[in-house]
Amino acid sequence: MPLFIGLPHGVSLPRNLAEPDARHLVSVLARTFQWTGPLFGRAEVEAYLHVQADDPASLPSPALSNDGWQRVQATAAWKSLPATARRAISTADIIGRALRQAGQCCADCDTPISGPPTANWGLCPICLNRAEITDLQRRPCPAGDGASPHRWDDSTCTGCTMPSPPGRPHLTALPTAA
Image 1 (tube, one colour):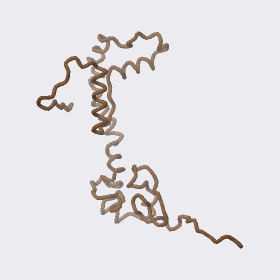
Image 2 (cartoon, rainbow, N blue to C red):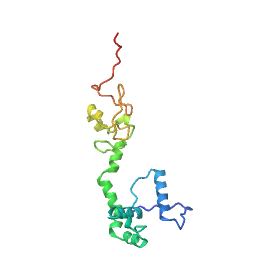
Image 3 (cartoon, rainbow, N blue to C red):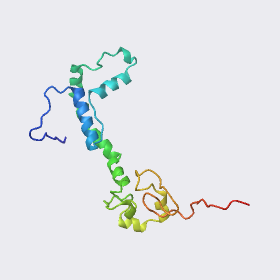
Image 4 (cartoon, one colour):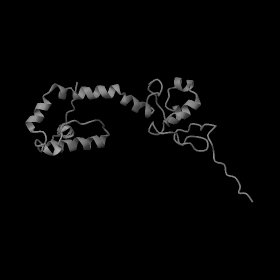
């Protein structure tokens, strides 16, 4: 079921808002509020037509007439696009991966967790108690983007404060030979 968001009382959009202006408005709102997701419209259909054409230069400009765009919008395939995109995102577990990488859910069992990565290293208390420190040291740093390695200094990761592996080579300053 699509989510409908109405405008607040007293707020209205211009009645003659052109499609490119509406697209720009949506992109500005998305950047402002950190929304993410694909936007499918006439521009994506026209880009598809250009990619599929043997000679893109032979396509009319615009590649899709208003009548053609209305026919595309009326198809069952176009109407199923939002549900199909949601299923693809769900199947790929993109939101779950983002939550695990952000340390909001346990990296092992998906239990919601709280606290900074320095307190739980991306694991719930049960999984943290079961984990071997060497396995944790091989995982990405939970204080970073969730995919980058730990940033080891002399004794810890500078991001999540995990102890550094004991076998990690350290540089040692030696006096110069006389």
